[in-house]
Image 1 (cartoon, rainbow over the protein chains, first blue to last red):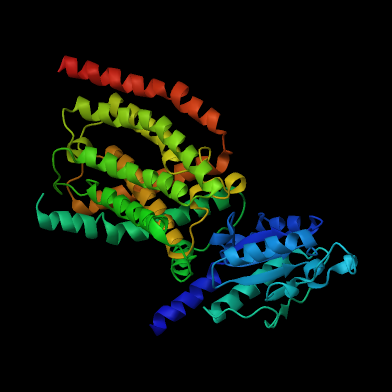
Image 2 (cartoon, rainbow over the protein chains, first blue to last red):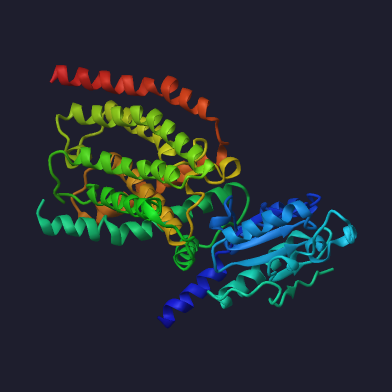
Length: 163
Length: 304
């Protein structure tokens, strides 16, 4: 049983499937996620696969400053991802709502609604930073196992942006 | 074929003990070949195994009633029939078989795609239903050519025994049949340019959209076993008659590997076609292979 658990941890770390959720993003972070999968950065070496359905995914990658319209969709999609799961907030928008702060159309930041595990700052962040964030989330996922943190209680990890 | 050889074929070689690692290996070869052709490094060797174990450890959404039971049953049926199809392949010389095992093999090869169609409809997702409808249309299109090609090769030999077909000397009819089967394999394995049912970007992986955790792991495994069964069928038809059992096994694995590489290269080099183009391709362009195969089989029967 112990061996099985160790194998499971290892496999969770090596096989993060991501689902990309746009909550009103300007498309800058979205194209950087896609750039992470291109031949230049090739995230598939870490086992990363971009999935079409949230049911298949382990890691939810959220971009955008969380518009009021998007809140329900974010909660629904977070509920559809089967546990164990992790959330990566990509870009400065989901972390702080960025330059759109105090806008009446926004209901951010993201960790008001769902627990966030990793923040990848940047406007937009570089693809290597995004891949580093996903790898960090995969490690958290492997350690966490089945226990899900309650909303807003999770202690987020920030990814350092290399100059 | 007695009980012991049947069990040995189903459970050891070419059955489950060989087929499951081979399925993961072929899934890796497909992903790696596509990655190399795109100038990437691609996934590590054990990646399909990691994915499988990880999916086994994930939760599934709560489902109740008949639909929930069916959704758990379809992937299991698909895996068991695909494993049974691999177990029927006449890889080793003098491994036995029975009259009509070709018909059973063709039926077992068809069950996973029927399971996919049923799974898409029982998931009651809009994308699942679109994917299932595409899979049904595709299956009606390529199966005409696929079945006619195999049946005409068998009819020319007056037998429905797989072993007799595997030992058949090379002839133009056999090569015509193999070519027709190879054209149908991308559609059977949902590869580009015929990856319509599980199109990730358009319909969110189609019939699989609502499946999660262990069920999805079973779908991945059944897909891999379909790879082994379908490429293995072509490999046994191509392979020359070898009496040494280990040499026959090595030739089988090498030929299957070659066919996997060929299909992956085609998948990486092409883009997805629309459904009407695909149907037109199979009904208009490849039907010529079926007509040629049937007419030459009839000719050979009349002459003999």
